[in-house]
Amino acid sequence: MTQPSLSQEENLFDFFHDAVENAIDSSGTMVSEDGVYYLSNLLVERGRSSEVPQPQTLVELRIQAQEQGGVAAVQSWRELGDRALYTSGFFRPSLQRKNVSLDYYLSMGAAAYDQLATVMRWTGSGGGFENIYEELAHQFDACSTILQRVRDQVRAHSHADILKLYE
Image (cartoon, rainbow, N blue to C red; front, side):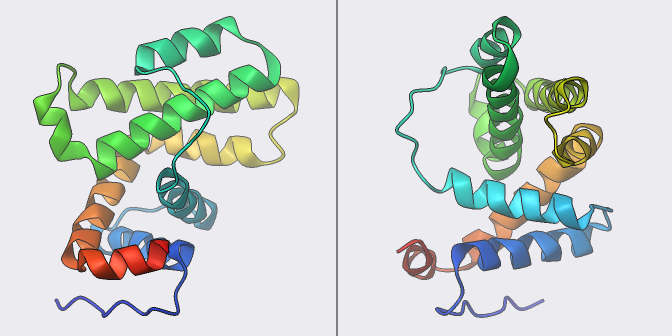
């Protein structure tokens, strides 16, 4: 299968959205359209650097989420889920060089999204997003694999093409 050429008119979201859809199609995994948009947006967001200091480890994020309440807990659970998903998918090969396993990232991320969906339901603050987080919790491993496939697609493009999109 040949890789499509990278259009310079695309924006980064469209690029990742197409890559996520291609990865889902090739894997045969069922992901909702909202899930596709979430995964695409996650890749775009993780391409930006954050100026807000975050805890370094997943367990620190989990402790922070458990100790906080309200909006701060929601943000911590989401960060934990997002970080675990992004790392276990897009940077899966790097986990072989770490002291924690892929299974650790998969279980921590799925539990974080499950807790996030629960908190949003209890507080009524989800606005429909609790369904997306519930889907991510139940399909965490499959979504991680989808991000790994996206990573493989991205690596097929030249670094110069990807940098032009970021610019």
